[in-house]
Length: 132
Image (cartoon, rainbow, N blue to C red):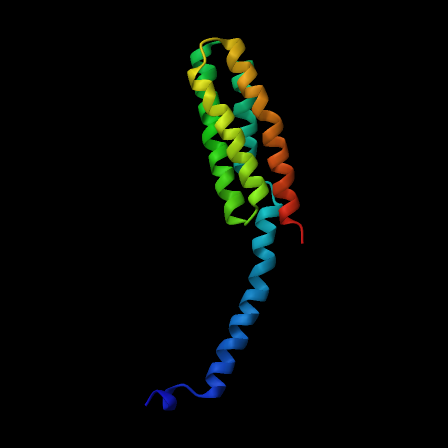
């Protein structure tokens, strides 16, 4: 019964269609990695605000926002299969996570400032992964 429903021509047609679909979607997936994710600007702005904010509690809030943005960017890198960028975003997030336990603005500034080069490196990796 099954052989009557599935002809070799039918199988060939589905195989060709599947291959064409893969060929068309692969460049689109790579483009997503090449483009600058919107979260990157938010994370960068929040890192900057955490460093410049005068009030410790407010600076910690900005640092926490930046950490969440870095976590989202790690997810973007993972979906793009860009392990180097994912690892660097995760490292920057772990660094910024330390900001919630600091007791002075000076300490917070040091912690967040240490995450900025990690963020920049991760963005470079993400752009590199997205190039064909």
